[in-house]
Length: 227
Image (cartoon, rainbow, N blue to C red; front, side, top):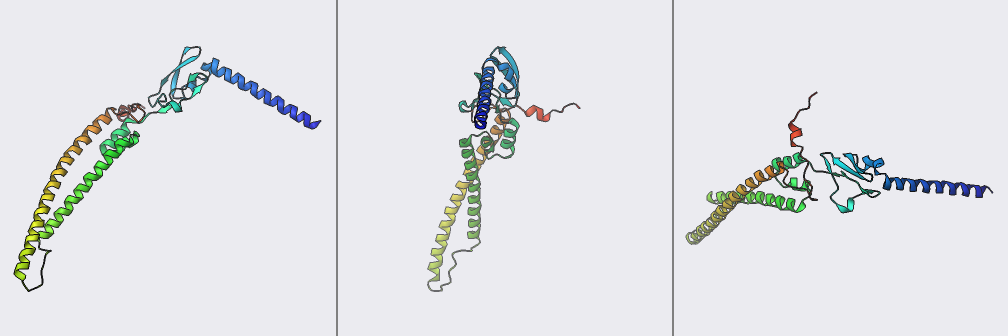
């Protein structure tokens, strides 16, 4: 008998829960105004357009979810203002002070980041090569190589050694000249890229991976609120 009573109580509680769920689902579908804050993700100001439509004016830091797979609904009403936008000042800061493509990494544009970052590393590597070539050339001028100690036929061997040394000097000179020209061209192009990238990031001309514009927070950083 006790077992039957317990089963009956469980059935009644379960049935009540299901009825409440039906009522809630009905409210979700028929009365979206009851959930206007949830529909705006608490990140916007709701406005009733019709009995079953809420329009949200998103705060500046948020916008509607651009990715279809991440969109949520309350009943038949699309949840709005659920996507947090990237900060424009952050992209400006990364582009201006760390010109290695990290602004594109922040925007999740990983291909652009790889191109800029690898180009920066190649430019640094080219400078290192230029330094090594200059050092070797200086070393050769100081007669630190091609020394011969064998006294037999020393004249002919010294001549051969001097010729080899001279040929190598000329090759190093040519390599150094080419490397210096390339470094100058790459350096100028990099400076142009640096300036252009900083300007376009400051103006918010680059969108993030999902095509969403960055939040215009540049003015708020330099404005002072009255106390």
